Image (tube, rainbow, N blue to C red; front, side, top):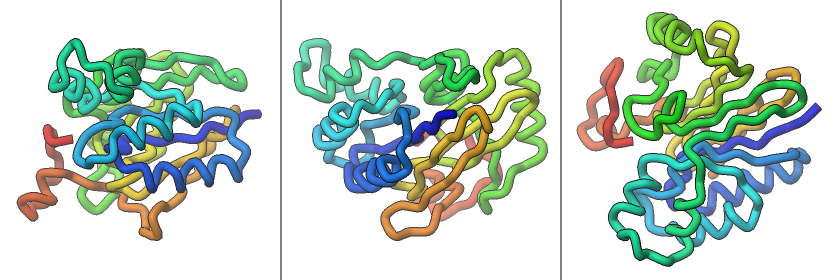
Length: 218
């Protein structure tokens, strides 16, 4: 049996990450995974990277992480740049007899694009989106698929695969623990806030609620 702490889309905001790490420590997790986007939106990137790296968090790269490298240039030698350069696009491992696959947006190795969107703006699973992604993931040979990117919080079985998005620690106010081999997921609220299962950047700016958006701002 094993327990895995799950984070995603921490977006250069260390306080909720620190809170999540305390939850994971108390729960006695064996490993901690971060599904990408350490960078973006906020301005405490170095502190966030130090916290993740010093805590032994295993992360994949996200679109904001690649953008940071592009903006800093090939010669950047700061700690965030060094962290992002060594991050893989995917983590593919076996834990407690279950194959666990993590990528930022969607398999096999995408860290950009629309990502896996299952929820409507009220945080409910849309049957059409669940059916679409069940078909898309039919050849995804893993027991658990961990993703981020969309700022949606869910743990849904799509076909033979449990698909988990722990949401953003800063925007969804959420982290999660995955229990293996049971394939059970616990969600934990952060920052004294209720978990927001759906958060869309364009809607925060315009005040609109779209039923299904590509959400290129994420």
